[in-house]
Image 1 (cartoon, rainbow, N blue to C red):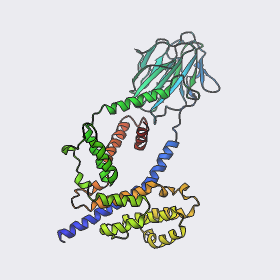
Image 2 (cartoon, rainbow, N blue to C red; image 1 turned 90 degrees about the vertical axis):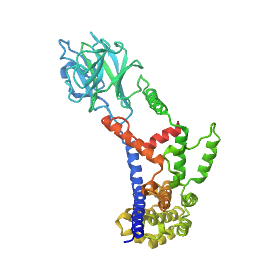
Image 3 (cartoon, one colour; image 1 turned 120 degrees about the vertical axis):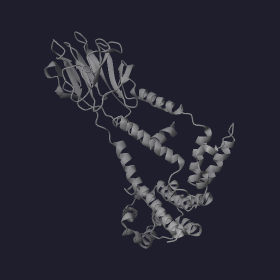
Image 4 (tube, rainbow, N blue to C red; image 1 turned 180 degrees about the horizontal axis):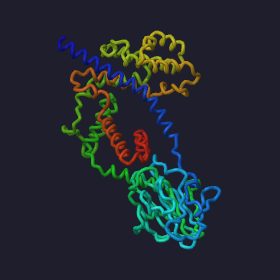
Amino acid sequence: MSESNGNSRRRNVEDQDLGLYFLEACRGREMKEKEEEEEEEEEEEAPRELNTINSSGGFVVVSTDKLSVKYTSVNLHGHDVGVIQANKPAPTKRLMYYFEIHVKDAGVKGQIAIGFTCETFKMRRQPGWEANSCGYHGDDGLLYRGHCKGEAFGPTYTSGDVVGAGINYAAQEFFFTKNGQVVGSVYKDMKGPLFPTIAVHSQNEEVHVNFGQKPFTFDLKEFEAQERMKQQLKIEEISVPPNVSYGIVRSYLLHYGYEDTLNSFDVASKSTVPPIYIAQESGIDEQEITYALNHRKTLRQLIRNGDIDVAFGKLREWYPQIVEDNISATCFLLHCQKFIELVRVGALEEAVKYGRIELSSFYDLPVFKDLVQDCVALLAYERPLESSVGYLLKDSQREVVADTVNAMILSTNPNMKDSKHCLHSYLERLLRQLTACCLERRSLNGEQGEAFQLQRVLSSSRRG
């Protein structure tokens, strides 16, 4: 086999891989959207009441609504504490968790405590006196973390005070409040499920717990906003030279063929004081992504406008090698988009005819079957956009097809060093690395804290 034939065959394999990548992206996007919607809708089960089964038994009396507890005995030693946990552990898939107690009566000695304990905690000991527990105590204002020796922490608290305990998952800290003000925070060195816990230890001590069934005295939303601002300021402290950030944005516009936006961007950058220029050592190879820029811009605009026939014609004229294989993933996605555009404008009879001619040959190929079925299913609904296959009618579907064609054109560049460079811009590679780092950090924190969703981060940045 000659070298030219070998290169041609290798190029064909790479082109097939590129097309199949976008086919999977098209198919996986709909599933990802559903998963993200379900994740947003699905709330972690949070504590709602006290656990009357796993408690100190005869030392405490719990109200019928399971939200108040009273110590009725006379304490004689350190093992007759009235301890009770919440019915569920603190939720972990959020920025923070928080609850409060209202001290109705400090009793004889005011030996009330609030904090967090593990599931196996000894239920006759104050939170903080045993391993895997932490408690802020009212009689001395000390914080106890895993042993009987407390550390200076905050003021004492008594009858009428509202005291809160929370977990800041972003900072990996416990924090405590009194009457709406932060008392202090401490590193959270405990792993595993943690249960909100309260303790009473002298006669007539009585507290009421608020798991969020009514507004907190402490402004948790403001505290969360401050934490997010801290994170943002840390990011902004990282210095990125203007020419580097400019180069990254410019490479994105080049990669996807946004020529008009690129020209406006270049004009704007040169009007800054001082003007911004890309450094030669920036690591961005523009030769690969400036290839066929005007052609790629034209085809993207055509596909975005739903002019699939014209896009097909241009491809046959400019890059016949991309569409010469009638059953390639690229041709399949273009044929599907043509079918979708006919459904979009209500030309159902024409869509049926087109489907029989162009899509039927793909139906028996397993890799295409699912998407063919979704396309055909559009015909079954009076309002297909509101159906389970409505994702096909969204503008994002046109973008997937446009991205496919864009990547296939870039792959025809004889100077392209690696076909994988056709798939993602430098900016997207950076965002992928950011996602991987955030997921790894969350993993090191025991999967605690908000689940990282890049789209949500970008959306909040735009709102800011």
